[in-house]
Image (cartoon, rainbow, N blue to C red; front, side, top):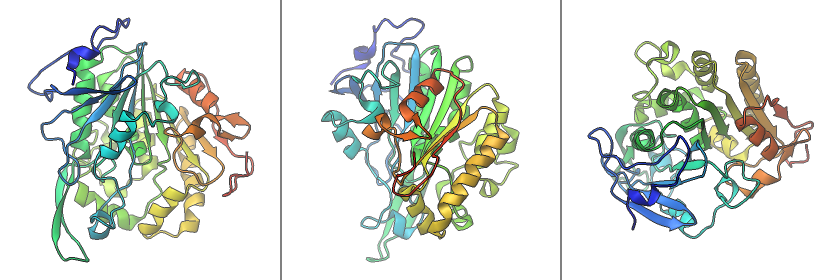
Length: 370
């Protein structure tokens, strides 16, 4: 086990990691060296996973004044069936992810030794997901197991966990020149939801957001069932008038509204979304929410197009096929769409180049499009 001093003295220009203990910041006295430059941080306090397991997050120091804050995915839960053990549709602890870090079983952007990794030089902060609320919630809900009739409690504490990590980032990462907020699947929603808060933390940094496979094609029924359970607006950016839940009913908003209102309030930042044209995971969740699966792809294209029409600094990359997420996988380095390699597109995007939106020429569920 190593303390915070294990992360000090990297010698980064205009950037440092420091040990801080403040009343408003979780006292982090447990940082464990895991594998190949990755550290596990255990913030304690009110943080928690859904069934009471300990929450922790992961940090890998880079050698630049750039940082990526990375929200992990893992499904969602909002009723008796989707939350109960045995039928759950979400990850309820961080142990499976921790094992991958400890065993060096990492792919995609987590392969720190790959020269073509667009985030190779970045300081990488990973926010795991174990609360079923797309990193938005702050509530404890009692559900009933339909098979046994027994009640059980789920701690939808995604917002509490995210706040603890961002408090640590704010106190330990000083004056980064570039900030990227990213996330895959449920983490994609975390990345856009928390963009305003991170922007307030680092108002002078070059700022990019990247949502990976979270286009927000959902049903009205899901909104009405999930939001009261999650208490998902408690951490909403009240300083953005169009997103202030004190005056705006969030159950009437879609992902288009999140992107456009955040983009209009912060016109200097860049926002983006990656997805495959027939994402099977997003289609699955749309179906269990009560949607017709054949409608997911047309709705996705309409949503992306609508955001692009509203925001001049929004970009999208739509790949062929059904694969879900790209950032955590080796496909990051091989996927192409419209003749453009995603890795090259991503690097240019985060480096501030004027990249175009990309869409597969002949999108096909079998990935035949290019």
